[in-house]
Amino acid sequence: GLDADSVARFQIGFATNSWNDVLRRYGTSAAAVRQLAELGLVIEREGGEAREGERHYDRFRDRLMFPIRDARGRTIAFGGRVIGEGEPKYLNSPETALFHKGQELYGLYEVRQSRAKLARLLVVEGYIDVVRLHQAGIRYAVATLGTATTPEHLKRIFRLVSEVVFAFDGDRAGRAAAWRALTNALPEVREGRELRFLFLPEGHDPDTLVAEEGAQAFERRLDGALPLSEYLVRELGSRADLSHADGRAHFAELARPLVARLAPGVYRELLVGRVAQAIGLAPDRLAVLWQQGAAPTTTRAQAPAPRSPARPRPRQGDAGRRGLVGQAVRVLLHHPAAAARLDAELIASLSRVAEPGIAILRELLDDLRRDPAANTAQILERWRDRAEGPRLARLAAEESLVHDAKAAGAEIATALARLVTGAGKRRIEALLAKSRDAGLNSEEKLELKDTKFYEIPE
Image 1 (tube, rainbow, N blue to C red):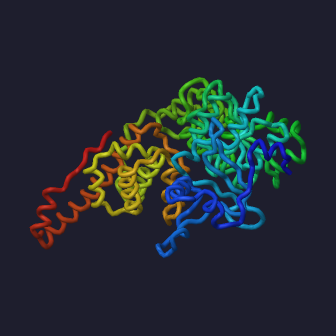
Image 2: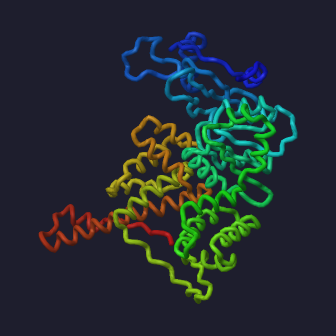
C-alpha cells in the first residue's frame, strides 16, 4: 500500500534472500568485514571451524529494509521486516557506536524535512505505521525502535514540540506499552507540555486505521486522545475499587510514587488535585498524608495521625536481601556510569555475599568498570543472547527514581554496603555460635577478627 513517493522519501529497500550478498558487495577486505561486523550488518559465525571468507554472514536476509537516519539524514542503522512468514517479524540493527535505540526515533528526520509547521508529534510502534501516516498527510509521526519510549526520546521530542500523542493498540500488549510510556514520561512532564494517549480499535494499528477512515477522521481521534492525568486516573481506577475506603486508600498509595516522579510545579499540584478528587479527599489533606507517609483514608472527621518516627530498617531476611540485589542491578542498568564511582574494595567484598542474583550484579559491575556503556540499551545488547538477558530487560523496564550518576552511585554503594555488612554479621554470628560449641580453628579466629563492616549512609 505504499506509493512510489513514500518509498523514495523513506529510502525503503530490500535485502535479498542471500547469506552473503552484503559480504560480496562490501566485504572486499578484512578491514571492511570488521567494519561491517561492528555496524551489525554481518554476524560472525559461532565456533572456529569456518573457512576463511565464510566466518561471517549477512544479518538481514529476505526483508523489507527501512534505513534509520540521524538528524542530519545519515543512515546509522536499519530495520528489516520479514516478507511472508518468519521470525522475528521485525529485526533491528544492534547497538553500535553510531546507533543507540533508546535515543533515536524512526521518521524524525523525515518529519523535520516536511517543512510543515510542527505543533505536535505522534509516536507509534512500527515503521509501516510511520510511512503510511506520512503518506496520508499526517507528517508528524515517528516510531520508537523496538524499545519502550525513554526519557531521552522525550527530551528530544520536547525540544521540538510541546505536545506528544502516543498511539497504541487496544490489546493487553498495547496497554502495557502505554503504561511504560507513561511512567517513563513522568519526569519530563511539567506545565507547558502536554502528553496524550490514544488507544486504537481492536484489530487495528495506525497503518490499517488511517487507510480505512482517512487522515481527517484519524486526526479527530488524536484530538480526543486521553490526557496523561486522565489516563493515569483511569488506569489506577482499574486496579483499585473506589466504591469503598480501603480501595480509595489503595488507589492513593498506587498514585503516590507516580506523582513523586513529577518535577515540583503547577502540573504536579494539579495532578495531586485530580487524584484527591478521585478518592474524595481535599488536595491539601492528601498532600500532607503523603508527606507523612501515612495511608490516606476518606474519613475526614478522623484526627490526623501524629507524624511517626522514622521506621527502623527491615531485617535483612531473604526477601530484603534479594530486593537489595535487584535494586542495585536496576539502578546500574539505568545509570551505567555509576559503576566507575564505586569503591573497588567494596565491590570485591561482594565475594562474601551469597544471595540470588549476586553473580549477575558482580559481573555487571566488573564489566562496566572494564568497558563502560553509554546507556541501558548497550548493556542489554551485551546480554541479549544470555539466559539472564530477559530478566535484565524486565528490570530495565522498571523505573528508577534516581536521576543522575552521582545519586545512582550513592544508592548502589548503600545497597552493596548493606549486602556486605549483612553477610558479615551473619558470618560472625555463625562463628560465635561455633566458638561456643566446638571452638574455632586459627583461620576462623583470624576471620572473626578481620571481618570488615561498611558504614551505611542514612
